[in-house]
Image: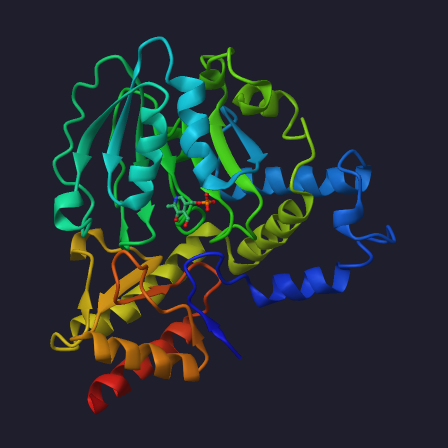
Length: 357
Ligand code: PLP
């Protein structure tokens, strides 16, 4: 059995895959697969509505906010957000905490005025920027941040209090812990880490803010279009939304987001304890105060040992432990669906490997 530590697309709960398999050719007595159903049919509508309502309930999303199921991934949101809100000479403020924030910024730069309010680039993004000059953000369209930096393995603890619209790319830690959604005007996430398969992009957006968006852009790119049509303006990624609904059932069966959060903390602590007690054999890339509970990044003493580590891990069925090409080293992505036992086995292997080498 493979232990899946991939950064994304990532592990899905086994029970979700099994249910999807059982229902693949005949969904709910329709005699058709979910992916064969019309997106205007009652049978599909139930899936669609349930996924939305369940996400609202699990994440405690207030009625002030809408939930949209879009396509194009988080990368599409990098462009769609400024296209909607970076108008009338306003400024998009960005916190740079990794490559994904840089990509979000570079799309916004094409559309309007932007400003970087803080960056940890000089420290190879090993921490969330500390000095946040957020007291005065003149003429702000919004402040954008990346809640979890998948590549560097850092994660925001507390989100800043600001009096301008706050936007977060939560692609790699949505649904992993309790958050106060009301603090944000927009949260977006590609699904392929904690929510389900790639194909659906979840956007949680304050309804009042949508009204302030630019109406002079193509209809398909306006949040308002999708909000008005309940994400059925055009054909949504129906199969991905169906899997999302199964994942949400799974989260509820775990005891909800609080229980999932506690499990994630336990998993991450296991790995970080192993790194910290390895007498410098394993070194964490992220500063302790910025460590991510989703992506644990670490290095070994040299390239040869890193390659040997990855090779032996692979032989033991551990997949996806290589670090991102821009950072090197190793990365264990331990999203919601990665079981505690997988982390225990990885830690055991890390201890044995250190002992031998
Ligand atoms: N933002 C973050 C934090 C990510 O981790 C990723 C993908 O790994 C992206 C954005 C890009 O997402 P997508 O491939 O859905 O465009």
